[in-house]
Image (cartoon, rainbow, N blue to C red; front, side):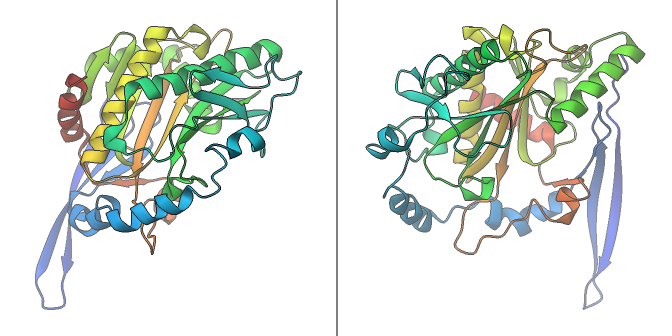
Amino acid sequence: MAITFRRECKTVEVQAADGTTMRYELEYRWDPLTARLSVLCPHLREKWTEIYRVRDESWLAELIAASTTNCPFCRPLIDQVAAKFAPDQLDEETIRVDDVRVFPNLFPRTDFEAVITSPEVHHLPLNECQPALLSRFLQAALDCIKKAHNKNAQLRYPVIGGNYLPPAGASLIHYHMQLSMQQYPFEAVRELIEASEQYAKQESGNFWVDLMAVNQDREIVRSGDVYWYAPFAPSGFCEVRAIVTKPSFRTFTAEDVKSLANGLAAVLQYYGDHGFAAFNFILYSGRMVSGNAGFLSGLQILARPNPRPNYLNIDSWYMPLLLRQAIVLERPEELARALRDYFRSD
């Protein structure tokens, strides 16, 4: 076991116009697998809180109310405009799990794409999110992925993702998830796979198993085969991750889906209670049939700046977007402690 949590603290001084010296504490952290650099800047919390943690409730209510007009995922439009799977994609035109529907994305960006939604849920208040709803969404997505792979074995790498509200890249307010499948691993997943394989060769072990053994300060909870934690070197605001001790979606069980849904609901409850409204998440897998050496499936979720009339994007400027160096406010250890109460409430 050779996991190292590398960090370096620095003090930066700035002289104000009146001659006062202002001192700020920075902490550089390197991801223990990929060595990606994050910088913790707690002093930015006060400056950025209004942008990424304070909801404009009245404006948001107006935005949501206006979005119900001619919403393609609400009734009756969903029955008229939802695309259907072709016979060479799936045996069914649409996949259903109770109220949840899965149908093709009209504008695919990968070999196979689909939308997962329910006409019964338009706006999703984060602190009212129910595990049962998320469980139906995830189960429907996994059903679709397995059936699509059975039809086309070249669809080796799947991912389930979510973008909620415009700051997260959602073009519709109506709550939905998406799934994408392609022959080649998605770039972020490829990086994790290759780094995991390298670790396995050098250390004769599995990085993800080793991480769970030494990550107590940032551990949130273990639930069955799902391990929830705050990453040592976050890549975004209030980031939470999970390790699913399965090589691919092909081996996920109903209990795994339940654990993931419960955990997602707990994180969203925390986000909602702390003023967030928008988020992104991904649930990723190794190669569908056999997985990848030293790699385990996982989940990543992070909060995004809140919608506002004059939107300010504070998490995709040149440093995080082009230089790929994350600037975050929360200490992961503090976030993990706060989230443990939310997971216990399940």
